[in-house]
Length: 443
Image (cartoon, rainbow, N blue to C red):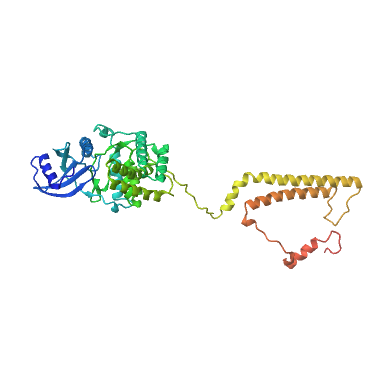
């Protein structure tokens, strides 16, 4: 039951002998499970009283008390870079259970709008979460709190989805999305760690840019570390998430969890289903209506989005580097010699056929070719030899031309020579050399 702040102050005086409460102060809030009120004593010291609102919350508080006792040595030894509440006394409640009183811890609730990318508060938050997840799981188990391995936690989430589906308030788009993620075995390969289980801005205290305390550990258990990141996926600025994840990963001693943020996204979406189930179980229609409206909005937001854990491939833009065409041709070198060889072989075959035809023609005619001008007589079989030589030369030229096309050499570019442009003395010499020996025109 919810009590007035003065009633809680009176309970606090019975919990801590000699406590003289002179005023109530923030924080003053009530959730579905606990009521919390700040107190001020005659010496100016600040206190907090926390009372459960129903028997189940009372049982959770007892587990939290055991856990706080196990966490104290880790805080004192520096394994946790933040403080946790240290119970100073307890007050019995008329309906059963008890309220816990402890000294107020330094800091104010985290303001998510202050989270930024890069070093700073975001990185501090990532390191604080990693430190808690690095604790031995025996810290949780010895307090009698739940312990789940990866498969047990996955089945627990699947059961919640099935129960939420039976209410008829979860759109089919979300049901398909969640079930697909829960059946993707790649997402559920992780090592279970201690988990806070109920992180929210009011449960994280900050002072001078440092995380100074974590509060409200009644829902702590061993499970998926992504649970403690789900609230950030839903509410933290997007540019801060990378800084949180990077600092978290660096502070963890195990290898990187490639699907940590994918499961954190799933946790953030399933939080709406859990809110719906809370309204159904407590028969609070206003909560059911609120959860149903948020689920419909979420379905509209993710209808065209990729599935959880489905990462679209990165498409590299097509870009041609300077000179890339010439280098790309190198890949064809393995095929080029074969092609050049074929051209040469074809040319040589043609030359052989030409030579054979010429010999046959001479043998049949029994005549010799006429002698031309000096220096132009091919000699016996010269025509065939020339044809063969030209054919072979043509094959090699074809291969060389193909190779040149594959590997263009700017230095090999030439221009045709125009004899008309020769100087007079070279032109006269060229003309003299063209006159046959014995000709009277030679000087």
